Amino acid sequence: MIRRILHNFATRLGTALLSFGIVWLTARYLGAAGRGQVSLFITDCAALLLFIGLLGGSSLIYLAPKRSLWHLLVPAYGWATVVCGTGTALVALTRPVPPSYLLHLLALALLQAYFSINTSLLLGRKQEGAYNFLNLLQVSLLAGGLAVLLVGLHWRVVPVYYYAAYGAYGLPLLLSFGALLRLPDRWAGGRDLLVTARELAFHSRGAHLSNILAFANYRLSYYFVAHYADARAVGVLSVGVALAEAIWLIPRSTALIQYVDLVHATDKHAQIEPTLRVARLTLLSTVLAVLGLCALPPLVLTTVFGPEFGAARTVILCLAPGVAAIALNVICSTYFAGVGRYRVNNLATTVGLLVTVPACWLLIPAFGIEGAAVATTLSYLASTGFLVWQFRRATGAGLAAFVPGKADIDYARSLLKKAA
Image (tube, rainbow, N blue to C red; front, side):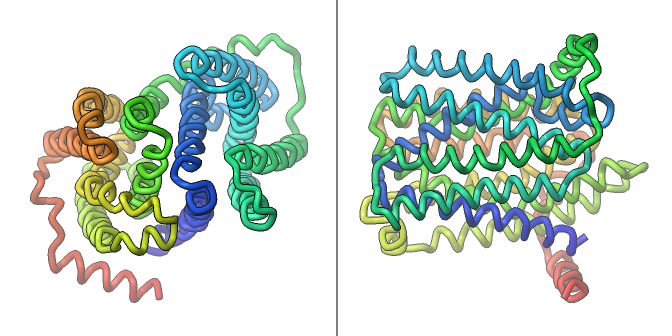
């Protein structure tokens, strides 16, 4: 298992490092205000992509082996176009943004949506190599384009991000069409389009309800800070959040392996103890990583990102308990997904959202980005507490079962020796 976890971690780490490079470039060369504007734009695009998943997303992967790819692509593209157009109009109605922002939002959201649809179809046909290559290429092109424009050409304005993103999504999108055209699928008439669209909607509703709620928990604070403060504050907050959430590579990497083992296990009950052992080691690793991040002095942050970002350390300290709790959150939610109890995960994200909204409303006007970080931590702790309670009801394992001991450390050492 340790080899699989390490391999998955290494793959995710490569993408995460490039993503961190994007955060660093936009923070270092655009300043806190510029980084804040970029963060809000990225958040707007991500929100649109979530709603696109209501007629696509994971259901594309599920249905790809059973249906013609072109019958899946047409309704998915049509829905994506409607969502991007409607979402852009809503942004125009709810926030004072210039027309150029709306044009870039519409165009780049469409590019991202089409690219996501194409790569999901490739993954559904077990074209993992093409899927991984295209996604890594996309992040590499964005980081490389920003480096050329910001550092090489000294073009240090916010629209630089938009221009780099066009190339980063446009080229991989074209290549993804080439990969799809190499598959044997052919258009067989339009009779099955309505049936296929209904199937897409049916298979993705539950999963994307949870995703939408989780997105609100993770990013709603950005909009509160933008409303009560300014783009500069959003920029500082986004850097602190990006550094703290980078630690989630650890629980997410172990959770993927745990999920695969649970899905394929005939005796789900027998997987409880392995799940707890993975949870204890994951929690230990996550806590150590959080402590290391908290130990970073403000001088490091200002040296790396710029003089405006020293305040990000306070954000990190306020986020630390919640980031550590997410290790348990991910393990427990993966267990319930593996045994088919998706409703528990949806309820957990709902609990978190019920804390997020009033906490942001009360804390951000009074305490700014520190209040945003505390609100996020309270949300994480609430949803994690609910999941641990549900896990205890399902398995009989209480909170003490997640506390790592000497036997767990010895077990981890033995696995690392075998993997070496």
